[in-house]
Length: 314
Image (spheres, helix red, strand yellow):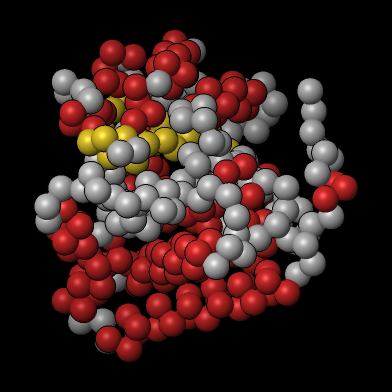
């Protein structure tokens, strides 16, 4: 249960950061489009714990959670979203485009499914630059219907590239339920057509995610090629901030609240005899860290607009 307690703390760091971002967006301290991952904390916590320092992570636009799990500092993330000079990209990237190569986080991408071919490129390069890197790319269930994702999977499989394709299936392709968009809603079964491993797993259990991603990475490093893991999870908030969520089905959020990863972890810890004080401490420590990061980020100087075109290449 020690590992689960550590996972709970990490999941609280993500949850509370996202809640802080939501508050700062509501107060207009953060501007622009923001997509939150509240309810989807277990996947990144489990997966990132088995990535090596040279491995490359490519996230979706709902990727603050993956950045945190990969080790990107909370203050650097908040400062970036606040347009501060101390942000991980000097305030240039905002929510949709920030990255931190020093922590193996190769950025979010505001184009649905566009990170998949980038990950394939990183994996291909790793076969020649001596790093032996594995690339992990994350996308939602709706992105499984994008041509770029299909092409990326086909290329990776054809050339046995070490790419882990992670589909976070929260049941909603933006505002449309995935089961109304496909004949076969078990998206992991598509992997068979590419000749690679495909598996649907519990995306709300960080230990399950850790074990299955670790196995996929080991196989990929040994030349076994790519894998597709479908993480079943849920989004407890709107697709974007300001989403009225009128599309929600009756009782959906109430049912999701019972199985979301933090609620499940707290129950399991309590049932195993872990003192309630220790369970509560995981949240309070994370809250203190997030609040301190927010204060420091808000106190930092705004980015200089004259630097907006720096680091751009055409």
